[in-house]
Amino acid sequence: MPFLNKKSVLTAAVPISIIVIILIALSFKAFGRNLEKNYSVSDTVYTVQDFKLPDDVTFAGEKMPLDNFDTRESLEREILISAYRHSSTILIIKRANRYLPMIEKILKKNNIPDDFKYLAAAESEYSNMVSPAGATGFWQIMPETGKEEGMEINSVVDERYDVEKSTQFACDYFRKSYEKYGNWTLAAASYNGGRNGIDDQIKIQHQNNYYDLLLNEETARYIFRAVAYKLVISDPARYGYDLGKDDLYPELKYYEVKVDSSITSFSDFAGTFGTNYKLLKLLNPWLRKAYLTPKPNKEYIIKIPVEGTRNIEKLEAEN
Image (cartoon, rainbow, N blue to C red; front, side, top):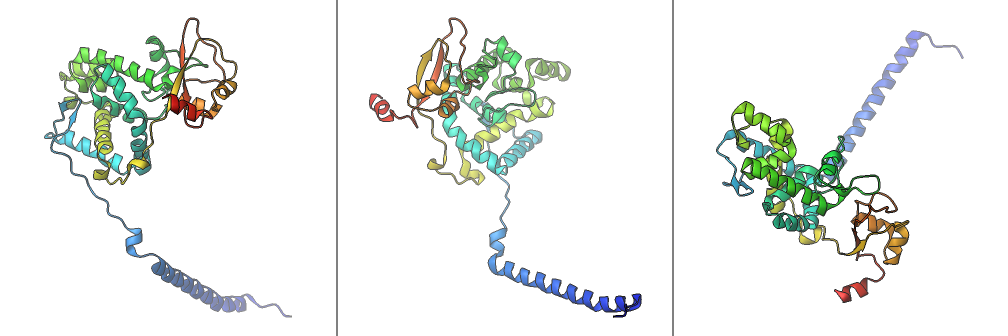
């Protein structure tokens, strides 16, 4: 069979290319008709809305000056971020139902305003988060700071993961800051920016009101983030979240066991109470190893989960 010359090949290729292009175009057209058939506009388009701020907003009983444009816009920014940060905000709302009763009780005991419970959402989203800098737990405590305040922090026990003890740590800090500044807003801001950082800016700017101070980005947003979470958690439906009571995480049921001696195996320890290692560690995240070597003369309180235990009927009867 004789070879085609270059000109003949090009002549034959042109019609084939045209046919291929036509076939591809027809395929896309058919695909488009199928999309139109299966999806209407209402299936793929939703409305993005703004949210009107309440006329009056307070933090810890102190009114936010919403008549200042920067205050108002800063709060609007955080509300919009929270409202449209869907998955994270849903989880925060769900977790709040589990952990806020515990935090509220400790705040009340220490005479700290109830609104400070929303700072934990701004800090960690109500989870035992660890920052790149090493800040740990619901209240993002640095190891050196925690140790200075008497927290046990080592490879076996890390009390920064204990919600009650870390909340008590935060309360002690808030109280000292309130005594220094005389208002709760600056006391809260100092937890994020540090007292030294706040003091420096007060000295430089000759202002002692949080809303009148130019602060670093994180501290400048801190109170507004907490207040945004306050508004969203308090009224999720107003911000587009359709969550029923059954959708929220329930408080965990447990009873407490006091321990002042070594535990060689938490797996065996959990088994004696009819539960397992996983559930035990979930309720006691401050236990960092599979064993316990206690400090001398120190008593530890370990939570034993009721859910998942074999003797649950007996425990419920006793309660």
